[in-house]
Image 1: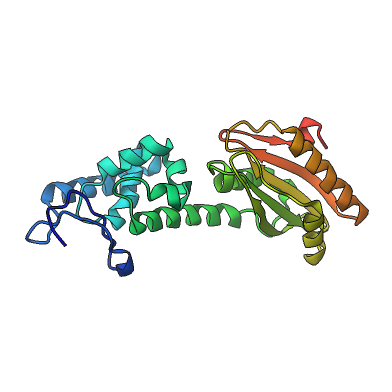
Image 2 (image 1 turned 60 degrees about the horizontal axis):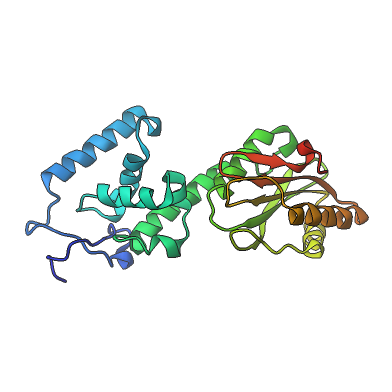
Length: 254
């Protein structure tokens, strides 16, 4: 592999199979002192001040350090932010789109997706096996973390028991930028399989505007009717936008 190529990504030894990147490595094999000092300063600032003390591009640099150990990652961090908009959108961007960005390979994608999975798992842990109606803010935060920055629609169902404790959180379907196929029969069938007594429907609007479409209102009514026949309660349908959410219950649609 030539050392004259302009840019290459390399993974840390933990992921040797991901070493498809192009890194400019000095003959000594050591990280240049100015890069080492820069990375040390960023890590120190993060440990002393936390993420709130850092702009998005610096937080993204910290994530990229593992994937690209011997090169300045600031240009790539800025390129990712210019393309996707902010840290959240970078981390949740589809793999296929990430790989179209110059300098991004499998190791970078893997690091970003580890961050995404960790964030979602932490938020999910706050609501699983809890009475969600009494911890509504935590539920909404989880839904925003999982869905607000996705570029296509995703439809999730939260299944609750008789005490309104969340017993399952499942993705029912994925769709396009403005449509996701949902089948009321399948929703109710799954509720019966889980012995669920109640449901909360959740889907996102990639446009950022959580205002329900006519199709959203119709399918919600169909699911509610099908669920009622079998004694399953539909508590709410949340539409997650970029900055805010809409509750069917609070907005008078249910």
